[in-house]
Image 1 (cartoon, one colour):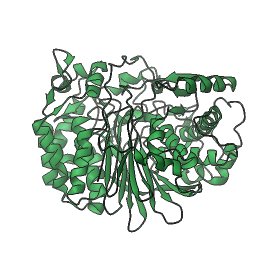
Image 2: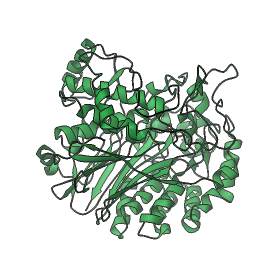
Image 3: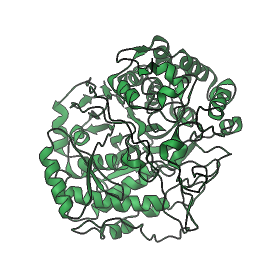
Length: 601
């Protein structure tokens, strides 16, 4: 696949001097309202979990164990589990449960997740798939209007129609059964306590509540988050006894308490009786859900072994494709230089063309994931990159037989969260969880929000009679872009780096950009996370504007336009969390664009 190891270079080590165990959260201004008329083809131009500030961070250094999560409450919950002797999986579960409460716009037990778990003793990486599934009632034309045209994106998102069977709880249970150390019920204690005592609304959550036009009209959510139609002020303490009751039931009864019985019945009632777009989710859909343990998708990159999620996530294969295409180029340059941005954008363009043609649920479609990241194939793809932009790239012709497919017409939105944990034994978890768009479907039940992941399927199921791989089907998992990654040394399979991000399909470029900076060019981890984001999803090349980077933006935009790129300067609202090991020390980085926190011992 890709090849792997130059030790992560000395310039990364320089940031070890910048030590901090707490990092301030950005203070946001209210973001602009979304374009509600967006159709499926245009929806990726929208960032429904909008940018709410940028504040510089310092790297955090530890020697024993570390957690990084998108909200300080979650980070503290994870560290509490590690201090009790818990594993990295235990810490990740506690963080994920807490995020249900304190980051309700992004992830939670009403959604799904992908987890990569590295076992330090066996040197093995496992991939746990907790992706949502379509109900048995789903039809491939469910997001078309009566005229056979794709529905407006937000018309489809809000309400019960977009809700997939939540997978997070079953996935967390599966991972815990295999790699947990503490009792299952202990992992729920921080989230239960916080739900009962209450937590203060953060500036970011307040800004997103102010920005959302649908949530004030959603039963349950309107009463919980708003007062008199306005979002409750920053600092307001939100108690959530309904969620505490659900968490206590699952802590005592395991996942069956969620997927069967009164909680499941209330989920079904909420979806079928939703205030907009009633859905067809059934009790049988919930009872039949199964999380899946899969083989991680790994490839060599220079002197490293880079591992990610296999399908139905497109994150692992597309990140590996970008890295492999760039490795095959003799003119590699850092993204601080215009040439580096050009090469990265063109490599991403090629990788996304393949993603949109071939990636989907492997239980329904023959997905050539290994062929897509094979070095000889990526070398051919790299040869297509010239001095000028190629414009829209076509999918590559693979050396394996594939079904004749049409290109996907969908994109996933960035209501997502990433977390990383490493325990005292050296075990590592990199996990991305999501309810898809900000605040998901806006359907709230028993104190938590349900996902809208079904809108990650292609709205258009067939083009000129050819099927789209990622079309809707009963019990199928929608394609995802979540890209939790773990990097090991190629020879000894020792841990080097774990990273991931929210951001919809841009997740792939956010994560690939950090890996290129650190592995290829020796950039320090925090500096790599801080740097301006660049994205190309086989369309315009998107550049992020950051204060203090005006000269980079001016030079880069001018050079790209000279090369024929269509350039857009937009908010590229990543939420990267990253932990690496450098010369025996742990180094953690949180994204300055969000309110994440790294804690270490």
